[in-house]
Image (cartoon, rainbow, N blue to C red; front, side, top):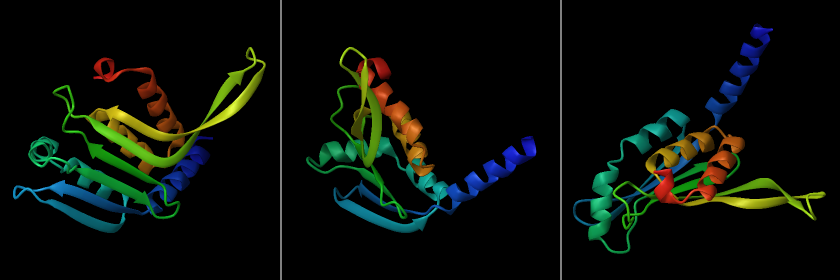
Length: 167
C-alpha cells in the first residue's frame, strides 16, 4: 500500500516540478531608481531562491527614500495565468516587515444562512493587506505548489487576526 502511495506522490511531485512560472521583480536601487527584472519559464526552486535573496531591509530603506515607489515580487503561473503579487509596505507601523499579498485566485468558502439551514458558497479573492515575511513566504510556497487549501487557511487566519497579534 505504501508503494502505491509513493507512486502517487511521485506523480504529484512531477506535476508540481513541471509547472513553470514567470517572475517580475521591481526593486529599488542605490541610485533611487526602480528597476524591473523579468524572468520566464522558472521552476519552483528558482522562484524561492529569487525571493530569499532579496534584501528586504535594504528595499525598505530605499522605499522610504523614494516616496511612491514600491518593491514588488510578482509571480505568474504559466499554465493557469494565476498570479501572486507580494508588495513591501515600507510605511508599516511595526518594526517587522509588512507585505500586501494579492492574487487573482478565487477561494470558495461555505457560508451558513437562514439560521444555519442553508449553505451558500462565497467566493473571495486572495488578498492579505498586512502580512509578515513568514506569511509572504508561506503564501508563495502554497501558490507555487498550487495548494489552494493552504492559501485558504492562510487567508482565513489572516482575516481573523489583526497584525499586532499575528506578529
